[in-house]
Amino acid sequence: MQPFELITVSSIPDAVKAQAASSTAQQGAPVRFIAGGTNLVDYMKINVETPRQLIDINGLPLAGIESTPDGGLKIGALARNSDVAHHELVKERYPVLSQALLSGASTQLRNMATTAGNLLQKTRCVYYRDTAYGCNKRQPGSGCSAIGGHNRMLALLGTSDKCIASNPSDQNVALMALDATIHVTGIKGDRAVPIDKFFLLPGQTPERETVLEPGDLITHVTLPPVPSGAKSLYLKLRDRASYEFALASAAIVLKQSGGRVESVQVALGGIGAVPWRSHEAERALTGKVVSAVNFRAAAEAALHGARPQSQNGFKVELAKRCLAHALAQAAAQA
Ligand code: SF4
Image (tube, rainbow, N blue to C red):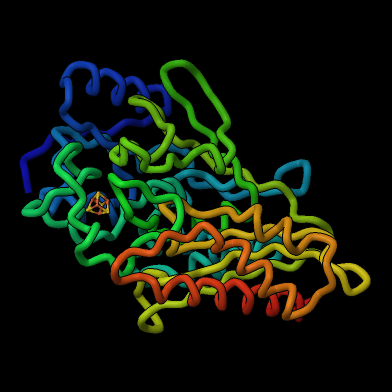
């Protein structure tokens, strides 16, 4: 691990100023906020992340979880994944989020990992983690070793000729299905970013993963209320039963009426360069009779644009079955 400076801040404006000032003063030298550290410290130990300065934000008042006047939920950036997953309001209103969080990592990690940290979780591509290999996301212009290499876990949708990495988060798939909004404060003030505008596809610049700018601090996430009577759930398929990343996963919010799908929100994990919202599946299913045939048709629509690599073709069918099964499970809850 490289030497680094650690500073602490006790107010949100101080955190923003410290990050912006350090980023400006040390051109090209990374400055990072640190909270739980479950991802960042992991990467610092293997020299993938080499910040000169860490800004400890654990003292900021950003860990609350509370109802909003519209019946939605506000989740602080520093709310620990365990606290969110076990919160009564989350379990009652957003079981898809609770289930997604509990399907990820280990108890110890969930007790430390934060909501904002999870939003910024790095890919598990093996070449990103190994500085002996070229990786455009880690070092722009160095190539993508995963194309034609070890890519079994990587993405089918949203990839580019520069990067085929998958987003590893479970939380973010649930937040995508729930139409979350990410609230950010920065040197230019506050702004609210819909989650479907927060993540950036790799394109020609895979090193840039979100719309965050230097000095930006995520303060909280808000969730709108789910439609009255809707059921939500998260289904995750993986190589082993715990402490493993998704090969494919599905987050569903489904409302049915009179045997038909009145509304449905679908997001997929493990198969996208970003947490993958599938409006194609939603369009295919809305208004249709609740049936296995129509669930399969929605799954076909969701994976229509899949571009498998040399080792991950099996995930096309796996993701279709995952989505069709999740839809059937959600429908059965009604
Ligand atoms: Fe790097 Fe992305 Fe290629 Fe993996 S897939 S080696 S993260 S550029």
